[in-house]
Image (cartoon, rainbow, N blue to C red; front, side):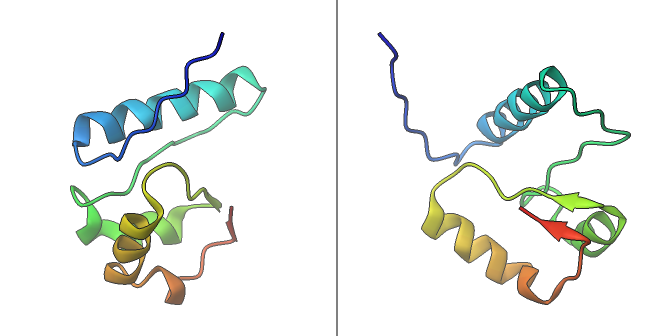
Length: 85
């Protein structure tokens, strides 16, 4: 039986763990990354550089209202990466 676990990542440890799990899943599915970087409040000041360097931006995990607030704070809507998933 599968156990469903719901987490709201208020801890950077959980955010880092989730990002590493996602990276592993992509790697196991045949995707290779030159760089794989997370964006959260620890490095939000670097948002423009991180997003402009990205070929793909994946929006994943977390509590949707909390994510929405973060996306508004970093002004994600007005950034222009190649692709956002």
